Image (cartoon, rainbow, N blue to C red; front, side, top):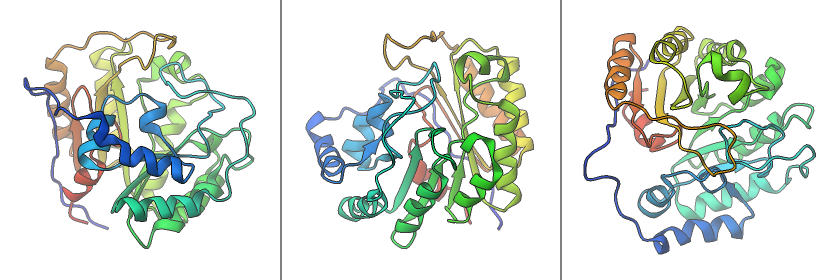
Length: 289
């Protein structure tokens, strides 16, 4: 597999983001409710939800339920030690929703399910297989408790893009991702890259990291062979979040862009309101595969 290097980048404009009527977002919400599906857009209080639902007519599906078995301090998704079992009808419902919405590039992600032996890998693989013949598929994968046997189950479903988010710098992992492992998450990207998947990851800045730490992290991400990186700013999803957000100097975005270009990422998407799945279809279209 060869990828032609081409950048796709974003900087905040003074005119701000497009105005969207809430009523324009209702169609996607209605379809999600109809098929008993969740979206990370709603569960994580994404700042781009009106634009994605209302203008782009797309959604990032949150699979395996909407209750996570981990408590990452930056995240707004609800937690539970014993969430309900995955819905066996979810792969079928996912397909019907995508067909009804006319989505041609589906982004799937999930909560962490440490309560399931394979971390939910088999269920996610079935979801990917259920839609592979009607659209391209990007999967934003959990770590499956860092068991490569579980990761292989997912990769055997052959998503078009495999994403696994590093999220933050190594120093902040104990607070931001207490059950995560920075080095092992880097290895997940390397493992998928070595199997010739297009790989993607995301960082959020504004958690208290320094720029040298961000720079080192981006270097280490590129060393895994990762093709695509997105970098956005952390906004507290609610006042209940137990990690603070910090102001980010506007010059940081230009420094990160310069670094990503220097390191030869095939695509990078940079800006305060960028999220890992934001305009994901357009990023892939910027690459020649």
